[in-house]
Length: 201
Image 1 (cartoon, rainbow, N blue to C red):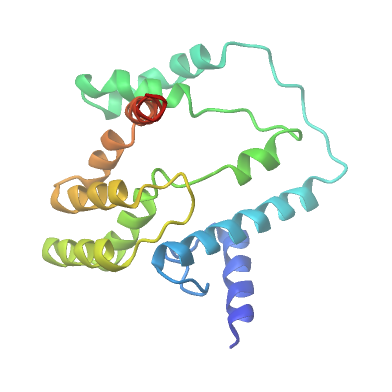
Image 2 (image 1 turned 90 degrees about the vertical axis):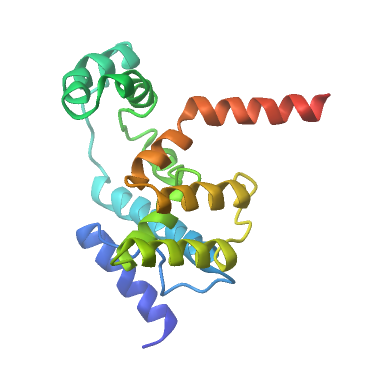
């Protein structure tokens, strides 16, 4: 089967079921992250095209006028209190406040195309977890990924930071909690602001 046929098959599978491989093996690229980004982008473009096809000529109810952050906090507070310890609840709620958006015919394309990985570490760690059957394998894959898997896919990614996050996650009992803590919007905003100030100075 040709590369184009494999890509078409992978995209059709995604559109039917939402399932896909984290490392997008059907796509070409100089390294794992470039292959993943190429596959990620093609999946999103295909999703946008399919949404447009299915929604053509249809309308939806108007979006209610409300304070979205307050509404989100009120709706999700019971769930957050049920799943997270007290020390983590406020940080999780602040994250959710910035993450909820009403999809409309005006913004759905930009919202879908704007979806990116959390500092790329979620995709990298998810790829490792799927293939590792033990902690030692997870650590070995983390080291291999750090040594060979990263390339500068776009200006928003810091390969050294992603490497550090993935390695810490591989060593931790709960790697997803490490990623959530390291990639929280407040921390990333602080780091970005510090970098901007250093440049200005």
